[in-house]
Length: 407
Image (cartoon, rainbow, N blue to C red; front, side, top):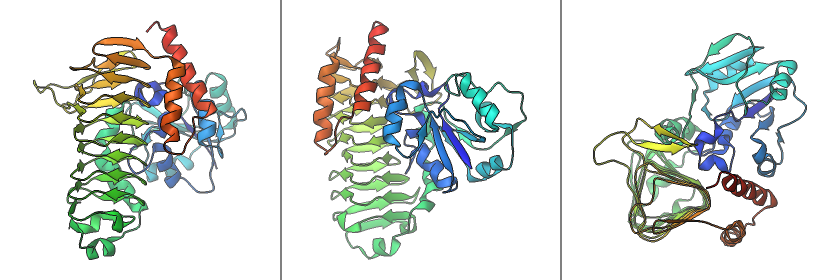
């Protein structure tokens, strides 16, 4: 069976994180959206990816075994990537032909003939417009998300759904005297010997999954639902709850209701709540974000040139790849910081900061792309990685795009 996993025309509404990755590569729990789909569709499935044109080379580098924006379209199943897909819905789609699937008034998938799929791609594909074919339409229960904060709000559901993919290690948890555990049947630990003494793990409100090669510093409090990715280090005396931390992060202080894509640092004390961070982010010591307005009204966020009312009281910050804050930085509710920014501010910086901006005490200065790439090379080399040609191409295109907008 042929599957096409695609971005749609609203992919950039997940900025700043979707500026540097396909929307289906966003972390939504123990897995990214795409990784979740691979757990649900047959192992024998042949998968192709449909992404925005400026992400094609990066996607090919990220997924070398998959076709990206293929020119030869076959009969197959088309699935929107930024959807919390349910296994029953995916089975239902395979039993149909020439049909469109919707959820919450959004097209989220289709089963198309070769001609129907080719016509859609020739018209610009899903990144340009929804299907305009006069085909039967069926409503599904799988839920699409439109903005980053909606992914944060689904952390409890995702953790509950996806813990079944992890082997239980309860006999080790129960025998380890270094741990104080609450509801051990909901706890999965890859390597318990890396959890230092006097750590409390509370799974009474949701499962706790700690991957292999994770160091947990002494006197830390971990509360589920919580996922900690492989290679991550938790500083001593940390409070981490209801969050998803991707691989190879350095995290300390208080973190709640937050997703960190991976490869980012928040080592020191400070509060990070209801936030979504990309990769290669570094928060200086004492960086805090507010996640609740003093007048208890819903938080508005600037997304893709529009001001969106989130309808939520609890919204923190959204920080793009390779952005950094200086020590003591204070971020207001609903702050969005673009890719490649450096924030140095005595007071609250603006709640929307364009990519490649150095904000120095209220003064906005556009960084030089050569300086940004050189710093990026240094940062990645510290983790034994290199700055690839596809990354250079993407960041150069984003820089030119910003420059052409006159910002």
